[in-house]
Amino acid sequence: MGESVAEATIIKWTKNEGDSIKIDETVLEIATDKVDSEIPSPFEGKLIKKLFNENDVVQVGAVIAIISSDANAAVSEAPKTTAPAQETAKETESAPAKSSETAAPNNYSASDKFYSPLVKSIAKEEGISLQELDAIKGTGQDGRVTKADILAYLPNRNKQAATQTAVKTEEKSTATAPASKGGAVGVPDNTILVQRPAVSVGADDEIIEMDRMRKMIADNMVMSKHVSPHVTSFVEADVTNLVQWRDKIKKEFEKREGEKITFTPLFIEAVVKAIKDYPMINVSVDQTGSKIIKRKNINIGMATALPTGNLIVPVIKHADTKNLVGITKDVNGLAARARANKLAPDEIQGGTFTISNVGSFGNVMGTPIILQPQVAILAVGSIKKKPAVIETPQGDVIAIRHFMFLSLSYDHRVVDGSLGGSFLRKVADYLEAWDTTRTS
Image 1 (spheres, rainbow, N blue to C red):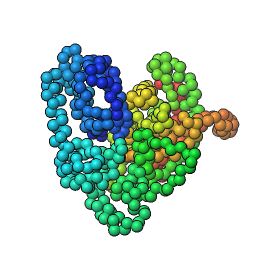
Image 2: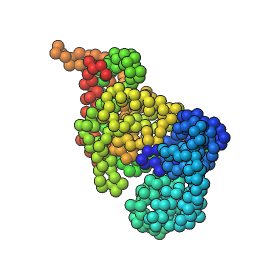
Image 3: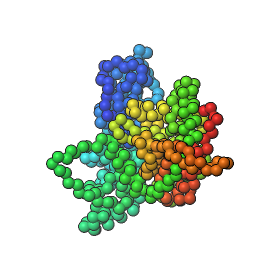
Image 4: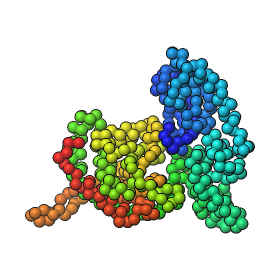
């Protein structure tokens, strides 16, 4: 499920008990704080028992179903290991007991809210009361408190208690109104909350409920703007060599590699080179806001539009170790799985820098919002033909060239204008100086 994913919600079982299952056939659909996924069966057999229901929140690693195979073995969907049928049956019988053991510590089960066993365990270890736990703002599905929420709450626990006391003393203050009375979405508890404006609804207006992913996007965008002071720089790049090279080799490339080559892998290659020149773009700020984490790996996220209109950001891991063919295969594979809702949770985690291709919507430039905890995001605009003055040994001439705008939004806490502007210019330089003689 990925290192940072501790629990998942079962959205839908696509198979019922007694149904036959083929290898790689979807058994259920799950949702995490990151992505919705279809879970395929690693074995062929019959679904004997479902250990959880739809809408249950389950810890990663838990046994969620038993499948009998022709070899008379029972396996679980979630763990990576298999077990003989007899041993698995014993584990199944003990599973409810484990759940009941973790449901009651400190009377957390008395709350009207749902808490996963992992969150309850952390709360118990840290001595967090039920009242205090209920006050923590959750970012999970339906406002549930996740592992990340409770861990983010702990370092600022004393400060938040003081803030809450001050709010009770000054009940008339609208600037610090509690979230339950209309506070901002996705704002950390130790931040001054901003009152949402009242919105009138006309008789002919249509009210559309946000889907789960749109709510997560909204929360993340508000949070990012509160965390990072955004600054955006722009450059215009002459990418004529790049365009002509791609037009020249794209048919041969597809025939040789079995992959279509778009502009995205070319942009990613240029970005990776520029990050190596300016590694302080490839950093994060820790939760205290006082330490910079310099990333060793270069993992490039690429914003991808889904059929629903939402965006998701699959990540090309270790992009600095791959050639253009490898990057192209990753780009095409991730984009295809994203549009088919087949991305694994680990494929959208661990990004250190993100590219958003606003040109795919016909836009010439954009001012993207940083994907936390990264400190920069690049928007690439559409490529347009323009007349330009070209210097030649015989004098200046006017020629038709291909131009595009690049815009970089960056976190001004740690990225000054000099670094942000120089990095952006370096990306443009690599695109403009594209070698038209290269074969791949």
